Image 1 (cartoon, rainbow, N blue to C red):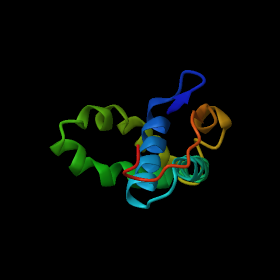
Image 2: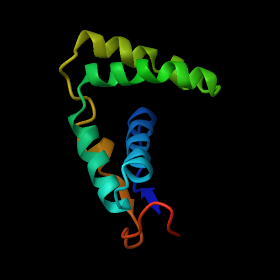
Image 3: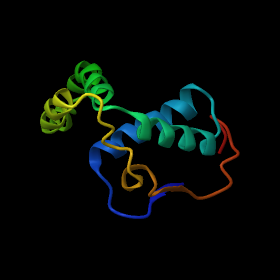
Length: 111
């Protein structure tokens, strides 16, 4: 189980969890490896990376009926374009609250 130790930012959490699940389910990492890599990835994202990532998600989100999240984040994307080298999620507030409970040694498809 992955949980948060405090209230978290919805955009950083959505990015981290998307990467976490891709790491585990697609790349075949263990749960602990997947979470650790996703946290490192989130810390290193620049504002320009985030804007590109969100723009890339737009067609799939619209098809899935989740465009609301992307519309509410348009402001974040606009801010990112003004300061493309900023790393808005580098602070531990955004990536550190996520903890893994359990041994984390099981792989994809295992209970």
